[in-house]
Length: 290
Image (cartoon, rainbow, N blue to C red):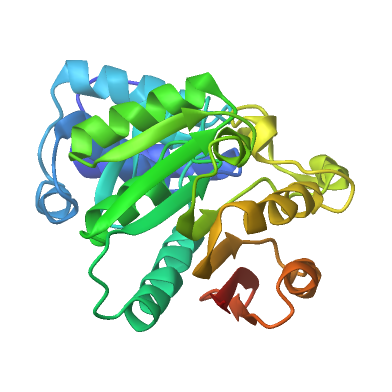
């Protein structure tokens, strides 16, 4: 292609090219904004602007890379979550909007359960990945002490970088689920996790941009997708305060199974399965009153 393009021409080509390769046309706008530094509103006002040749060259190369399955978030190096930019790479899951709904559900419960509390709320995020949950809670729940744990040192490097960039105070730990806290007799008011929950059998139907570019360690959890929940829920009573909250993101169809696992440990708990904005089971949240 020629290098003398107006913005609308470049976007038209990119959208068509991506569509031919079965990828979303919106990727074109994200890449254009990345290379120009424009906001979404400015992009639409610059449609007749001629792109400088160096920007076109980089834009075209990235569109072609996206069409091979590389997630656009890995190309631009970040993704938005709860109104903030988080660094992402192949060592962590790309933040999904459904996890914002987990945050919203938890914040609502925090307000009702810990109203007028004087002591800091102690929170642990299990399997923190890029740190989106821990960092968001540290910034949204001002009177809190937030800890985050992950088995992957590479993921923790990303999470620490995000915490520093966003000015969030989070204490990070390397380890398997809650094991770093069991020996220390740590006690938390809230345990939250978005663990791996995809059944192994689903590999065959997943797109290559997920399978080839996101860590399998953060995606798959045994034949039924419940392996991590089983292990984690057995550990929770050793670290959770008598009055506390447990919140999980889950896969669709896993709600009653995860609820039953929690009820086995906390028979008196108020446990709810919540749907996401698309009507799919997405959250299990338990209120433990002691």
